[in-house]
Length: 97
Image 1: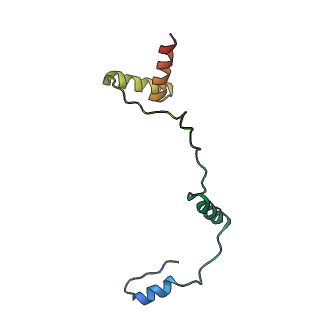
Image 2: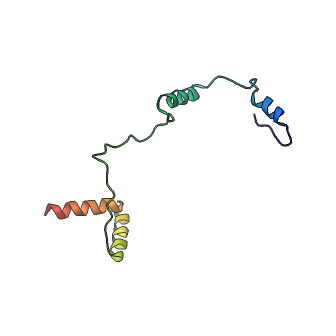
Image 3: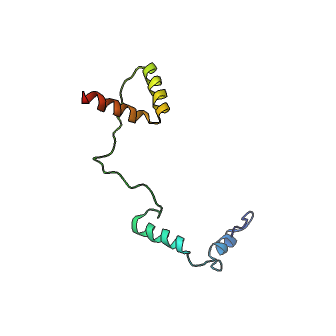
């Protein structure tokens, strides 16, 4: 319940801050969030699980000709893969031979 506080005295604001007539029990969803926050400090939201650090991809800066980069990006988009996946597949193919 929002109230306007313009021109009110500190005593009036303090009185409103200590009102308890609009307090109600938590809903089931709010209780679930509260309990999760108490346990972990995080919200109870579904999310992607963390990857194992040994299986996590690494960011590797490389140098590449701008024309080749543009062509590879267009090709990757046309076949529906990311740049990273295209490069990884290319490396696997080259190392296989």
